[in-house]
Length: 454
Image 1: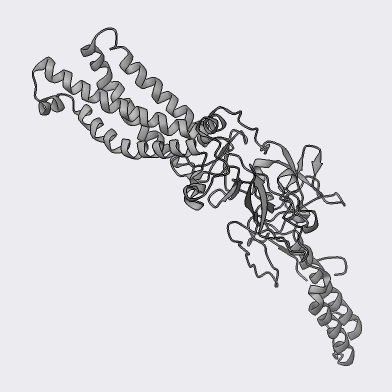
Image 2: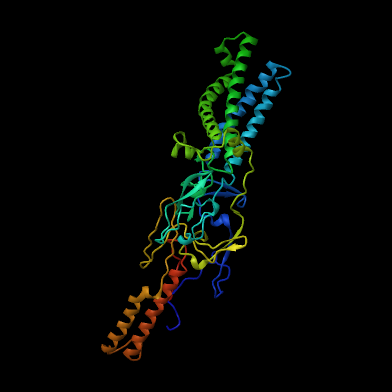
């Protein structure tokens, strides 16, 4: 029995690249494959969407269906009634605006909105500095705890920035944590369910073009559907009701676009006001700059230039960059639960992250720790001291057997030798259980164990 274990649990091959390495095997993945946010990726990490990206299908159908009906059943007939030279432009303009609307929708939904990269560990309280934005009045904490807010200056005005416990960083000004995507987004405006993505610094202009072009398309279809009915009444001498019977699609489109224009038009007007005053939706509802000065308002002309004409900053995340997964940091989970990564010339020294939950091992009883606003990062290490009861039991068994020897032993030999074998077997089982805990499979789903007959 010595040297043989009762249970065998091989290392999962999907998590490691070389199980025979004594220093710990690692596996390489793309950053988007182990991303801690709730985003969805397409095209190998080149396109990033929100967790509710399926709503894009609904938005496309609500826009493209009436557009297709207008082009197929109204525009060409209207072009014949209008004649040259304006007639041919009716279907062409509708198709061009519809295609542009679809393109800006995809540009809004399928790009990084301005996600701030997470820190690998909380900042040191003694070294908290916000570069040139740091306020001279903000002193370093003396108690060793991170303050919840810090003061920074923006255009000569003091602004408070908050500490994000999920991303382990002090958010830059105008940055907020999206509870839907579980990311900190620069110049966070809102999370739009119609495009399935956060609206931030890198996609706000495309979002504004999307809602404004949708409003223009609604008004375009609404007006020319009326023109079609009016020309039918004049051409054939029908009443308005007769014209609707002659072209029922025009009547349907008038009602549909009238209803949607109120919603899309109101949204466009609201964001036009926000752009002129250099506000975000979050700031407008949270801070109410109407009653106090807005530190970001630089005048209408400069605000519009800053929002729509300034260069779009590059993404701070390379989702296709290769990252190193450390299997020793995994706790019953897939590779997305723990990883150490490197960005360019800087690399983290095997910092592990637990994105789905932490397992506290009380003899294989799982308990998940879910933090507010996102999953908390926690590791549980198990040492030989946690199995002191097992080792103590084996020692007590040996001593008890030494005093009470059985008259006959089915194992052969003396009672002391038999008790030593039992103690060795018990210690072997305890050691194997320790290995099983450290190199388990998915959370809450241990690997199958092969049992050997004693």
